[in-house]
Image (cartoon, rainbow, N blue to C red; front, side, top):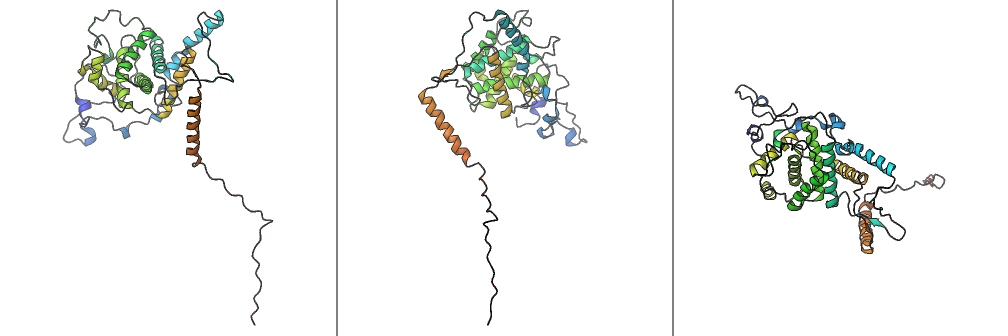
Length: 341
């Protein structure tokens, strides 16, 4: 990373680039200035302002832009609600726990400490909707993500590998295996989804049956390095996926970063938006977060936390101004003439 020319001049597998790529060819010439020589990778300060881009196409950068996975799931959600209305009460539907005067049900999942299992399930469901409701016309397929060119296992890739959409359970098993083996956190799963949608937006590609595994793998690899203090090395993923090489993992990470334009920043507002949109997705698909009755110990703990927060922000409150004295009660000093004898 110290060599400024290493990321741009190094050779890479054949990648069908589009006009979105910001890397330009080098034009070495002794008479040209420094701006016209070397690898013309834009400095981060010279990059165009993200606020000038259309917010509709940048949900991973703007907190007010709608997430792609939530908008793609709306069609299926409406159909499910219509089916529920026609069938009234479908068989096997479980009753939802509700709080009462004697019992309060809470889930431990918060924006700062999400539940790992439910978050991974929601992320897998979001990826499923991405694949299912992708653009029917088809967009460009990059070679680095093509599973036929870069297989994750030595088993033969079926000829119709790009024709059948994976099921939600298959996506969940793949993501859960990586998170369980690498001991990743739930926050990392949310950042993974942010990077995945940022890749689809920046590179103008779709996630499909032919590339979903390698795109998800690249997003998890990058999210674990950015979020976790003790990141999982690329060689560790080779122990999880036995048939993949370190060179392939390094190239996948390098080109993933290049397609993201090295923009790995995830604002807290964007993170919170993805968390609450995942909860909305779970509620719309009956993936409820686990509810537990509020115990006495948990109540005391919540009370202590609220008291600490109250004491913390008490000093930050602006002091109230003192009321001014009334003019009726205002007494001024009287001056009496001095008598000089």
